Length: 83
Image (spheres, rainbow, N blue to C red):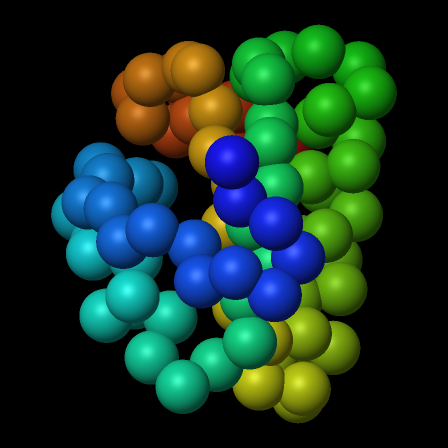
């Protein structure tokens, strides 16, 4: 179990911006890692869309955001097209 203050384990993932290694992608930035259960659901997509609206605010604070999901990268690309 990960606790506050613990270093999150490194992982590799296929994402909407390509393949990443989490720690390399994060670099020296702060990070917000949150769960996004499924595309095309009203609550989750509303929250994700709001984070995207605020992305410049996160970037100004040297903070990167990433969401983990059970859906495929293809599903995410489909959702991006309709948002």
